[in-house]
Length: 416
Ligand code: PLP
View 1: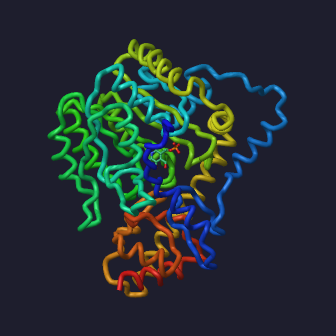
View 2 (view 1 turned 180 degrees about the horizontal axis):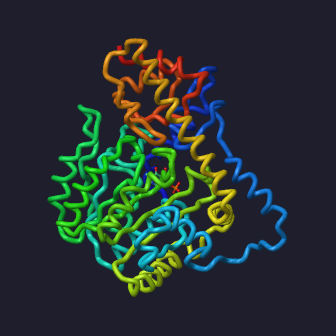
View 3 (view 1 turned 90 degrees about the vertical axis):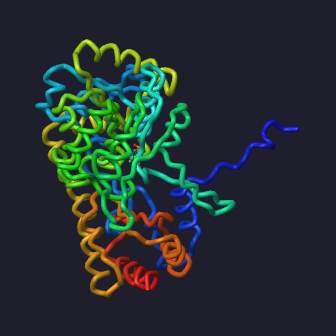
């Protein structure tokens, strides 16, 4: 007998399963709207020009080596990325009340942050938005398991009691601020709330400034710990300084916060796993204590972070000319996404597709929650070879000037 014969096949990760089906499809007009990465108007991955520049410099730099980094990660990288998130004039930076630990992507930052809160401070409950990043589908039964999702899966592995707060009002296709406040108002003691700083995945809908203020109030009243997931800085407005408004607001209001940064999207460094967990405390004395414990969490999780990607990021963030170039690269990506939003919206309107499609231009970031239902999604996949998540989420930059008419016409057919 084998130890492994009773192991159940795990549910496939929907976004990866979808890409596999797309790759196997031979249809000439196939489109993959499911991917979670930036694509150019030619439908190709994009290595940012500033990244190419730095990588070619690095290739000939004989001073670089492959020694381990410090357990907390590269100091140059940590300092620069913390400054990028919080802003140079942040009261937390000026008051020496923050620091960070390098992480294996945004996922790693979420993982070590949640681990720390659970294992060192005894937090028991974690709130995630409904819906949140990542759902999975079983390839065997083709049933979507609504309960799965990466925030939840990480929390589950750490033994948290997982709760959802209402976020997406499906009928009105907007943010359900009242629902979220009511749900957080019922939070038990020792609760953490995961907040998407900007460009919410998958809905593309963020709270307004006034709504963030209302959320901060209930989070304060209930003593909930705010943990920001910052995976898309620059992708919401195209402006790096504007997108972190929410986390900066919380800090200005005196909150202690965590911020899980990812450089996968805004640097296009998906497979280099560049992340950073920023922590802001009330007093400078706590910083050292938290960092030392966080290093223990890192040591037992991946021990030491990868260096290549963080070198690229640190070089860019610490050099004014390269930084200016990167800002332009980010804007190029954000602008193309905005253009595709506008185009899809206008084309659906021009075709007279039933329904109100204004949410497509109201949403921000890489994704749009189209409101297409599972039957319509299945129709697009089967009849048009257009692949998208069952939830109706599409990646806006998977649209191009070449395929957008095809997609708009297909949506018209699926809806009518
Ligand atoms: N958080 C959200 C909301 C995401 O969408 C993603 C990636 O898709 C991540 C975190 C994780 O990013 P990374 O690939 O850097 O682990």
